[in-house]
Length: 158
Length: 83
Image 1 (tube, chains in turn red, cyan):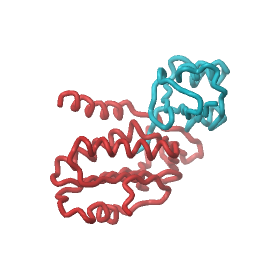
Image 2 (spheres, chains in turn green, red):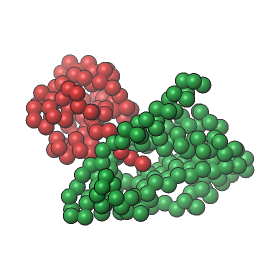
Image 3 (cartoon, one colour):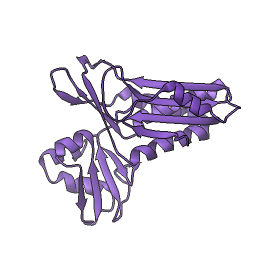
């Protein structure tokens, strides 16, 4: 069975997941996927290890809620959110959002919407370990909140 | 009883991830925050007035004025940074 929400420590394979997302849907004409990866530098410091904490139970609920909202807003045939937790290193994949629809506009916008809400509504927290062993929690970015707000405005004007 | 959970920086700095609180006339999340910040030190610094605290009640995002009842699961955490 294809699980559309997955929170896992294991890595994922984009080709495999997109293939599974499309399986059984002959009406799909567009798939948009986004992969978030770990940068080696953040806020002017080298990052050796990135640790992802989450709120088990609420995480899955929040992600499913975001996915449902995207499906209500655009005609999507299928969608998938995979988010990794635990310890990661630079260049590792952290998150995958893939959205399939008949036409490209819905897939592009649906994937963008899911990522913007995931950034501000899903209970994940990043902690960085620098090369000298010191650790620091990553601060939320104001730009992420602004990115989410543009969807709220678009919805009010609709 | 009320189950209260703390995550990420809050969990580390408060030195606890979870506790049970007797329902002492808590009508809303605000009352719980006030009660906890009266413990002083880190509790006041992290959960006191004007602090950036995100809230969940029964695993849904909530606000300070969200009502609560016995048996609820309340969580406090810093702004989320996933993705």
